Amino acid sequence: MSRKVAYRFPALQALPTALAFAPREAIDRQMRAAEALMQAVEGEREYPIDFALFRITGFRPRQPSDRTALGRELVHDLGALVLDLSLRLKLDGTEREGGALSPDEAARTFDVSFKTMQRLREDGLCAHWIERNGTPRVWMYRESIARFVAQHAQRIEAATRFRRFSGEESRAMLNAAGELMEHGHSLNSAALVLADKHGRSHEGVRLLLMRHFGRTRSAEARKVERASRFAERAWRFGVDLTKIAARIGRSESLVRSIVDHRRAVRLRAMPLPFVALPTFELYGAEETLLAPQSVREGLVVALEDSDAIALLKSARACRKSRAFVRDASARRAQQVARGAAMHFLIRRAKQTLQGCGRRPSRAVLDAIETDLRWAAQLRRALVASALTIASARMDQFFAGEPELLRVDELRTLLRALRDRLVTIVAQYDPSRQDLEALAGLEADFVLAHFDAQRSRRAASKQSLSEGTSMEPLLDAAAPWLSEVDRLWKRRAALASLSAPQRELLLARYGWHGSAPCTLAQVAERVRTSVALATRKLYDAETALRRA
Image 1 (cartoon, rainbow, N blue to C red):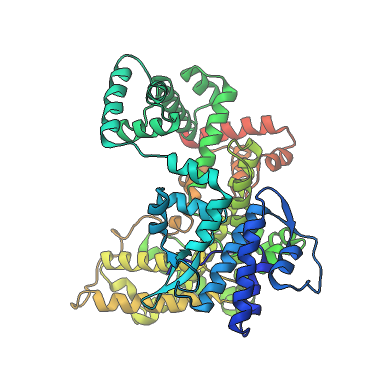
Image 2: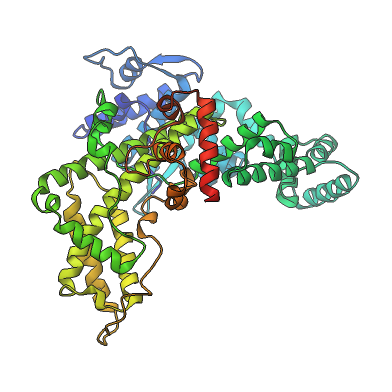
């Protein structure tokens, strides 16, 4: 069965439901009224929805509406209504004179393509669900086709004049196009010459040549693309835009525009999942969700995630702390606040990105990347909380000594836990779920699966002084972090910078556990202009790269 057609107007969508217990005669009468209205509607005129309802049902709505619809939109919904009502009538095609045709048979009758038949249906050619061998199929009555042909004779005639390229004609065109392109013609100009010669459309010939020769680009276009890629790579390595512009022979403003455009393209290509909460639509949601202190501060992760044994020890120390033992309710409230803020920031960044156009401004891109940095910090903090709970399940499962596992087994187990916990944090709904309960369940699942697959021999005790390092676990918590924070892996060298530069970078990127700042907020903090703050930040980032 074909997929159900979606309505555009709720008033018409409600009609089949209103006829749920109506007799067959009433359903057939309203279906035929909808068909008649489809023929009378003009595509570019506006019609009141109440008028359409009156023409179909014979009754005026109790609550009049001033909403109107264009004729082509109304035809779309009337066609969907006819399909819905015909499905309830269980038609077999013999109800009307001449019977019914399938879309393929109708296309052969008109000598047009199947896609043209689909377009004709959008213009008002009425279709019905007809049962064939017990299965409903979308067919068309000959009577409906005859009425449509009489009303749209010119459209049908134009469609029948259309013909595809024959094999011989295609080969002749491709050979001629190859000769033209060898003599200096571009693909587009060759298509223009051949279209005039063969009496075909320019677009049709161009598409034929593109399918055969591929999308060819001029040498200048390839040169621009190489320069754009080079400019973006150099900017990501921290090269000054003035030097990049001098290197590729372009103006600094153009280079900045190219870099910003490619940044936006990369951000749009990244998956940014979030959970839409009802509170997002309330008045003042931004101020309420982003105001709590637990959302703006204290986001530093206490776990040592680059060493397997150190991670277990730091997780135990965190669980034994007074705050963790005594304030379970406060800890859960903190997780709820951080989860809601994380989803809100990702949602705001995606909405801003979708509405900023093809060439976003620098300030808009800065706001988007700042929101994503903040959301990444919150995501890391939530994954670290879940990993702390999971480490307790590990201690219980291995009788307090998971360190006795082989190093490769321990690393594999921690990575599996991390992957599951990142997934549940990304889907965490703070309005309905308890993060710690979810983390415990996921840890139990991973541990049971690990125990079933690990080797049966007893794990031998190994030296704990070396060989337990691994890649940082929490860096995978937010996949977009490396895109919006190019210096994340260099933050350990902050101690070698001067105090003003260190404070500037901490405020900009939020590495000290607080909310990151936009360029405008950084400029306000250091009491200078955005241009001077940008220059100071560039100097600090350059010093960090060299440290």
